[in-house]
Length: 372
Image (cartoon, rainbow, N blue to C red; front, side, top):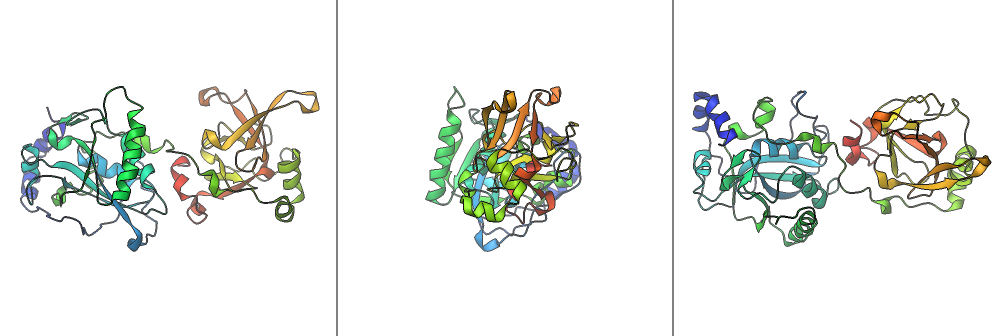
């Protein structure tokens, strides 16, 4: 049984009437509608709504992942995506209707056209998010929807994109014992779906959706360490305060309760004061009562390193930054049990706070999903 089709039947004559109005036979130069964001507790906020995009620098990819209602809404909420439309891709006739596509005789797949900013989002990351919400080993079926129109696929226009697609598919194959059957093909054609399908879940927040939006909260890939080189010691002495230098470079410890961030709970991220590499998120900050900033975990695991510290006749685990080898603080086993039991006790002098509203301006906008 096709759950989405059953849902459509339940909508009755209203949907049928609207369906008569549109065929939207656009192939490529689609008028982008820009992302929308309808308040709803069901779906996360769209991080792209307030962003400014250079439309002359956008890239595009076409993705088939089952019912396009959910795929469209999900892809639109990936940071760096300018616009997503729903349509029919890689079939064998012109101007197909929804009913014709659902018959399974046209060869079309329900497909979304994604326009994205390559300066904010690379294709590899975009595809990694895509694979989080499909079963690439399932042929002609995603979620509860079955039929050739619900097959998974990635359709490209440029050969350089195919190189990236092939790399990601190869990585995904390693995660499965069964064969990945997501098709990778040049885009043959793409027709915009009827108007009532566009931004469907924004207009109908309770509509059918097979996508788990919680996948947007999980970090994808790694923070690029090469973007955050460590300055020379001479530069550090000139740029850091005396306390910052002693703490970060000489393993000193600042005073409890008289430091900048011990009681700061504003939304944002904390970066290595030496290199600017992100190390902690306000989402993981809590009041431990120790007088220093405390976190349950780093923003992603790989940005910190650990070292046994036997100074002051104690045995502790020191936390250092990856890119700058900066002394950040120590990690203890007395943190909140429901958050993993860790307490990262960090010196304010080792970190710099970037407010959520400034993250885009400071080139950290790609991490907003790890804050809210």
